[in-house]
Image (tube, rainbow, N blue to C red; front, side):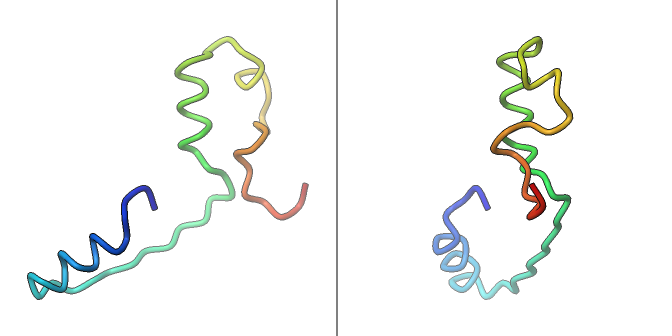
Length: 60
């Protein structure tokens, strides 16, 4: 998700490697949450259970 998929597919194909895709859905984009909390550990995001722009849940 955070790399260039075409480069990965090209490298795998050039080396004759198989490709395994795993899909996990935990309904939150934790990369945004973790990086925000790392910069602002006492900020508003730390005080809420539902951080803006990080939820992937369709129910809002």
